[in-house]
Length: 53
Image (cartoon, rainbow, N blue to C red; front, side, top):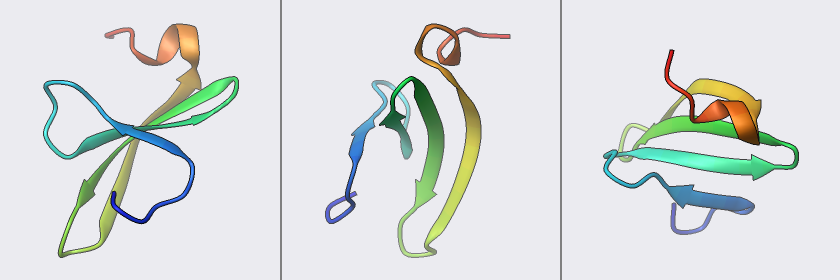
């Protein structure tokens, strides 16, 4: 995620998974470097995006 714009951070304890913050939403995604593949796994509000289930 070296040159990407936006509020992106890696998720603790999760390899290749990141969070993009666009208030009030959070977008959880994985990125495979070298293959340039982005997979969006969840889009939700801040209060709900990290809940399991």
